[in-house]
Image (tube, rainbow, N blue to C red; front, side):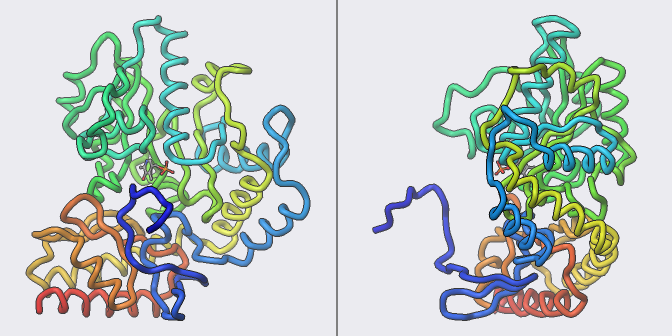
Length: 387
Ligand SMILES: *Cc1c(COP(=O)(O)O)cnc(C)c1O
């Protein structure tokens, strides 16, 4: 009997060590990791620069609180501002918390600017924004909401069509919150045209555009941020997963004009942006730059897409490939969970996204040999499935 709560469906395997794209379990068996801990270990496991930064920081100072200046926090904020074009940052510890911050900032800014009635945020079908009460309400998925009523007021779900969004905009609407590529919901890219149309709609109606890049950010799509591919600058961006390569850290970036709604005491976090988390984030951003990992993810992501398309041609249960860079979804004509189990048996870790999509998230520095190895294991698992 485990003393753990039963809120996760877990595979009966425990990993004890990792290196790059490889993991080893308690019995010493090797696995190839095409999950990156759900888009977290984007630089692979035990990346030497991140390890060194964490070690050095642990020996120096872990935590002081946000009552005092944290120079590393200022450094990471500056770096993120340079990379994103959004000049202000707030740090927290997870994706849901980053989205909570974005929801609060959107309300605060809009109510100060347009009046107390402004509070409603539009989110999309198939979205995923987290598991806290506000973010699970923003998430348009009944399965995640069941039994948690009453949900938060102030959210409205819309179809992924510009006309539907335009129609849903009302007096109380203050923002639109979307993932540029919906991850958890099935790896559905919204597309450049849609995101550009959304930007225009928000501008015409005085709404804030919020991109949840918790999964798509930090190089995952072959761009530092997925919004770059669409040529659209949002007002607020949220980040988390890949930012600390496994050290919990989240961030909300915003335009100066929007961020200014947060004055001293309006929002906060005890741990958010502490020296340990910031040392990890700085090492991650520096390593991505030094090792050219955004370009690398784009290049190997294209190869990956071609190889996945070949599998689609070969196996009748596969219906298509979606996604960008190293965030890829392989669509099946049936539930994807049995294929995940077959892959695990073959020594390849993969994920689902929604019911019928296999989600693949290898580290950004995956080698060509590792890609081939992974594709071979995936092909074997698909053959196992057909047997
Ligand atoms: C994972 C995820 C979240 C939630 O992040 P947590 O760190 O689990 O709170 C929010 N939005 C998106 C798009 C995600 O993929």
